[in-house]
Amino acid sequence: MYADLLFTGGPVLTPEGRTATAVAVTGDRITAVGHEEVHDLAGPRTEVVDLAGRLLLPGFQDAHVHPVPAGLELTQCDLTGTRTADETLAAVRAYADAHPEREWITGGGWSMEAFEGGTPTKELLDSVVPDRPVYLPNRDHHGAWVNSRALALAGITRDTPDPADGRIERDPSGEPSGTLQEGAMQLVGRLTPPATQADRVAALLHAQRHLHALGITAWQDALVGDFLGMDNPAQAYLAAARDGSLTARVVGALWWDRERGSEQIPELAELREALSHGRFRATSVKLMLDGVAETGTAALVDPYLDKCGCATANRGTSFIDPEQLPKYVTELDALGFQCHFHALGDRAVRDALDAIEAARAANGPSDTRPHLAHLQVIQPADVPRFARLGAIANIQPLWAAHEPQMDELTIPFLGPERAAWQYPFGALLRSGARLAAGSDWPVSSPDPLHGVHVAVNRVTPDADDAQVFLPGERIGLTEALTAYTAGSAHVNHLDDTGEVRAGALADLVVLDRDPFAGPAEEIARTRVARTYVGGAQVYAAQEI
Image: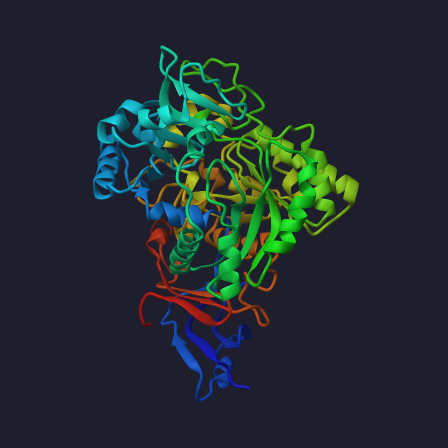
């Protein structure tokens, strides 16, 4: 039988390395991998793609991403490209002036390092939008900036107590200053106009086009549910899966309500059945254990430091009771759910590993493939536990570099010892842990090649002669690409993807060059030329 599609004339990244130069695809599967002998499968109707020396590799998979909020944010007040306070305020003013019909100004993506202490004030927003409420989550979506009008509508005053899972930033007199952290975001977020179902579907498809253009063929949506006013993407996925417009393969991580306990597990099981259709499966559960280091909400074993380097009373926040967590994880594991942990601080990482260990002891070996996302600080003693427990390290490589948010808002408050434990990709690999990779978009860029660049170089793609961040934790190009392909495919239980081999699904990416052939410092210049899902082309940058 002749192939439908034949790639030839360039290196192919297989599980054994760049060991092939030709790949044949018939239907939605790879039918042959090799060299000139594969050319015999070309028939009169075979589409032949000349790689011209460019690399063919498995489709990228993002193991932790939020496409629907990202797509919505792109159509609102998008601040992701701003870097200074003046740039940010100018962008807010321009958006508000261009949309006088909007009752609320919403969007987000501002950088904490643009503002002193990472906490901009309501007065700054009032200076550009005094007459309408404004609600703008920051880049990591663990805090929101609001103006005086929004605070007034929410009834937030100096007498409003902090919620148990959040903090209202206050000025020296005790008045709310304009930044809301974690659970406090919902005090205003719940008042913002909700997106419609049509809005959410449009945002999903817009995000999907963008992700396909970056070579991403599958992903795990890290939050399917209702949380802090974010739009629940569940019905958008279901609609797109049913009408065939969902061309990616997607796993949904159902949101674990932090205010409830085991009584929600039957509901999660019902949602798993109700929402799984076609290329969308809601088979994971997202357990957010802590916050982020920049706001002092990542859960640490030892306290944060203050500006003088002295220990404070703050050890961060545990959003789920660590004493109950092993029970919850054991029950979820017994039902075949994958647990997807948000674990940034070393205490959160340890709590997640303890819970997985308890589930293994109670249930025995399983194929649920629990994974811990973010992993900013890991105590060295906990690194070997990943391999021993079969816990997957879900890394967001773009964060492992010197930048203002790291150098000004994180390292001084961790201290030198803990700062050296950050994002230990190399140590995890050396210990035998399996790495998967993701972006957390819209928190940071979803471009896998930028993530690979940082994983290999430990400097940002746009850095010139920057200091390497913990050089001993760099990993090789093959290992970084494997994390974004086979590693994330393993997390997603997509075992017939993530590798270029006969019999696998033809989820493939053609790059515009072979990054192995150039210096590591130029990895981020690589672009995607074509993306295929199941042998069908879903993106083409140019004819090759």
